[in-house]
Image (cartoon, rainbow, N blue to C red):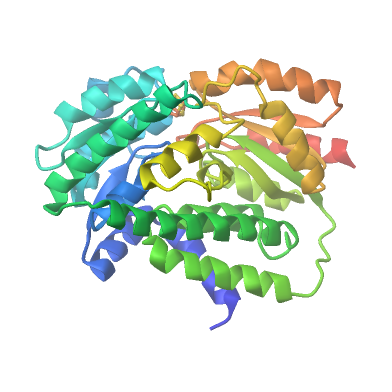
Length: 377
Ligand code: SF4
């Protein structure tokens, strides 16, 4: 089997989350724990002999979610609520839900009453003053509280040694993703915008021990491939996630290749490296969180996101930045005026689009993407 087959395998896995989760459960024989974005302590879950799987919304027919969530809540959380209530999540043995935005805080409490009793819902808070010891200690206490809750679900003790082993598997995954991102950017003719996103997304639903070798195989294949003949434009995307995927088709049709991202369902998952000079595994996890920069969920007085995107643009030789603004998303909207001013001052070509997972009509977006592409020529 060639690495091109592996690409197609992961693209299909990313396109069909429910099927991939069912396959993962069947092939590993392990319980699945749903992780509402963002930055969940997946290593702790994995150490409990469970597989963390991402709950990143979708496009359900809404019938139940409005019982708990207002119409101006983001589509991601409304979809999570709908799936929790309509039985889609019954494959899960538990749900971990962080509280980075106000809507998530409400959703956490709503999920506790909306999901069946057989699916415990576990909250997770993070110290926003994450760089100081008190903030790291707070986050570590939260990791350990989640560990305790996972122990109850998994009916097994989660020792520090198990967490350390899981942390190494996740560090391998993150390193492999960083290498993949670099190799993929060299070959937009193979890794189209949509394929790139689906390959990344597949990792949310698979056992990392199985997924990471496939990513390495793809990276090696890309490195050995003949030099790219791609003659379109190269873009960086920023936001929560690049969905619906039909928008990525529109990029591809118009000769716009996503060569890097600054996204939650993207490089925010892997771009912070763990520290080598820290012993305790929980400290390592807290430091990874503390060292993360330019992420809208982290308190950052310096507001480095615009600067970070310009660095990405230079590193990946990109022509433009596309802002995929999640509808009704406060954390993303708060950052926008600041980095917009910086990118404008640097004369970086930018396209702003509001996105919603439940969008079904794409003609307006298609026209705007076509115009933007012409502008870049
Ligand atoms: S951060 Fe934005 S997209 Fe994410 S859950 Fe909150 S409002 Fe929704």
